[in-house]
Image 1: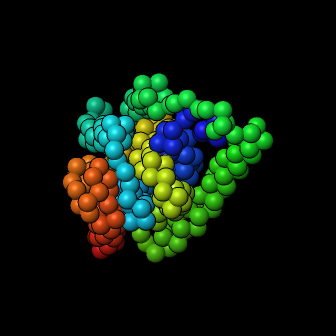
Image 2: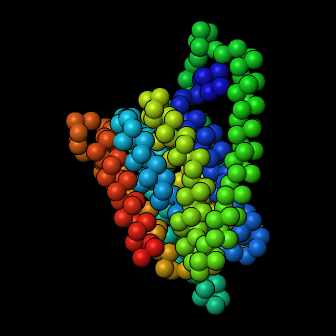
Image 3: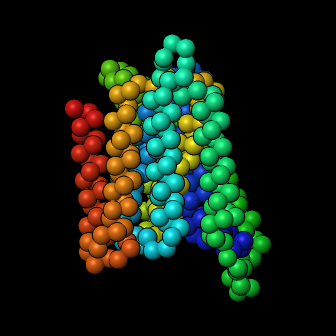
Amino acid sequence: MGRKFGVSPLLIGLTIVALGTSLPELVINVFASIQGNTGLAIGNVLGSNIINTLLIIGVAAAIYPISMAGRKNTVNILFSLIAALVLLFMANCSFTSNNAFIITRLDAVVLIGLLGGFLYYSFFRGGATGQTTATQKPKEEKSLRATMLIVAGIAGLFLGGKWIVSGASLIATDLGISQTTVGLTIIAAATSLPELATSIIAAMKKNTDMAVGNAIGSNIFNILLVLGVSALIKPIAFDKALNQEIFILIASTLLILLFVKLDIGKTRKAISRLEGLLLIAAYIIYLVYTFI
């Protein structure tokens, strides 16, 4: 479907696919915010983003090295880094009368506004679109089928994410785990399954632009859209202990940039299989540390 409109795989992964795979996080966070469970909401976003950066990109690179050549890839990772830094600033700057650390509705408007700027850059300033030749143009029937598959997939993500997370949350509550920890681990893992599946399939087809675009795009959507909508519904009280997760997310993003600049495994401007395995190992260490 993307070829019909001359849209590159990177842009498809960065926007359309990333938005679709971020829907479970959005659905869960909307329900959590309505119920006033803001710890679950922010834990879900941070946990999902750490999984995207370490586990999902790591697994995709371990299957097939991810080419990061071109300015657009670096710009997108930098935008993901900026989103994390903006969240760090908002969460730790108190402008309320009681000096509470809260992500306010005004912060939410800023986050959603930044998302609008990112989408504008991606579609109109990033040069990610191109011309499509007549031989590449799919038949109208195939386009309709692709549209129906996207709609069906989004509906499935909505229902599946809701059911999986509801069950995981009940089990974790029975075990006496805090809701924030549930969001960082069990719920984040459940809602990240679409991103993991999408990136694995893309990597197996050697479509590395789609694989990395999906993961990085989901990080951007999770902070700017999912957290923005959540805080718009109900301001999010921030536990400063979660600064640890934000710093881990920032460090992970910087690690991705470092791998791109290094030449491990003789893969210039790429995340090699060895680097992918290192990312997976880093996530396992983080997971063990979180539970211990």
